[in-house]
Image 1 (spheres, one colour):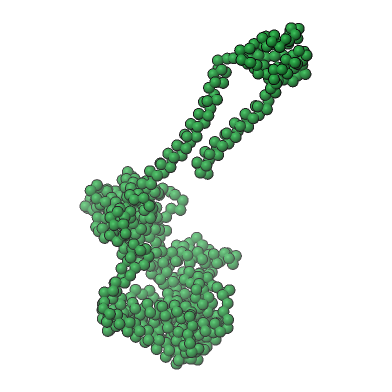
Image 2 (tube, one colour):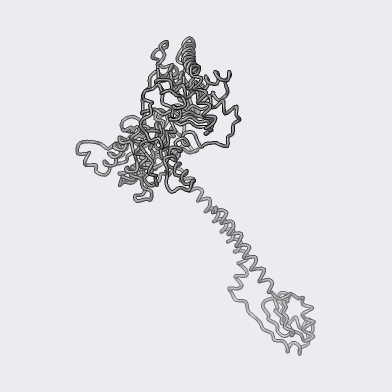
Length: 630
């Protein structure tokens, strides 16, 4: 509960309680009667006892009832009886008790009516001032760092044994940990401790996981904070938090400071709307000074992570600050198999599970994708009330990670199913009959995600470079669905919109980015610039003339036209195979790789695409890096 609300409720409750007590006391007080009534009853002999206290008479009557009488000031009881002519015999029958007033009671009666309200007001003021002081303390604490210190022996501790792949990155970071543990090993050779390590890689490649592993391996304090936690709406707060963070780190040196998503504060200076007074730039300036300024920064290693190293300020990347830059690439087939083993070690796998085959079928997957794949397979097995995870669960999870769950409730009419079947058949057949494309592993007209249907292709091996011919054939495959609709129905549908977008983007990159145009030559057209002060996105700088722009458009049109002609020629020449594939899809909705080649009746044009010796009773590959959607 809010402290202010709690204090107010406490005060209100106290006042109500005092009121109830006072009201209950008043109910027990004797009834007040006037002097005349008292004298009349005294003359009638009905008064048994009279207690005299100042100007008040507490009267007890013969019937046991009680009353209270207020007398005139400075008038005694004897004088009052004489003035009213009360019989002396009646007075002798009464018991008269005179009570004196003590000093404490007198002063209490005189002071308390004034002091109690005053004390109540002071109490209220104290509570409100205390609350305001707490608010001020919180306001003053804005400048304090919110970095959390990782405690050794915490539950869920991560070490390098829990990180698969990224061998070079682990070696670089292990040297940092070893330097902190045994600095003499390096200092005796004149080596200096690195001040900063920058982890760079695509999302999901394990940057934060590696930092947690460093915390688990190091026997030194480990402070971790996000880059966004430095920035506040108040100017100077971020810089103050940086100073406080490094002050804590220096007190605990040697130690490690981990800043996640450092690009939140480390973007290049001079691009913000606020100029030199921009809060983010002040925070960055303070980080630069703390890492390598006038004051020595011994024993504090800063580890930072980002997936946007291209937007970082050059001063962050110079030697003396982030001395080491560790690049985390997407895992290759060997790394993917290790990652699968790591995530599957506590899960009951069925005997038919082959992690090596799964690693072959997941090119382009990051470490986070692999973890999600295994988790989705476990969820699917639990949904079936199974006791182990089957190979089919893992294969099905690959498509779920790539495209989303199946939407069998998304019903299409017969005409839409037939158009989708021919569309996907066009993608699959063109890919099957071109010599430099990846083999087709699955064709489906079951909706997944936003796709009404899809064709999955899988490369035979991990590749890092591709040539012009491969991209040209890829454009033909992308336009295979468009060409199929044009050939068999005479018109096209909106299902080809995503294919045209991918084909146009590929052709533009070939011409302007990769130098794959004989007419334009090896030149970069339209250098991309980040519009950092506008948030996400950027713009292409127009560094070429209008005549060059016309040539670029002509070359893009030429590549797309060439790919469409290739697709149309293959589909026109093999109409019977197209019809067989489409009919099979309409009837069964899915074609796996081996069934697809049987339906086509022709071997793949790419010799590397031939099916290897595999058990026919095993689930076939169900994924790929290239997805052609209807």
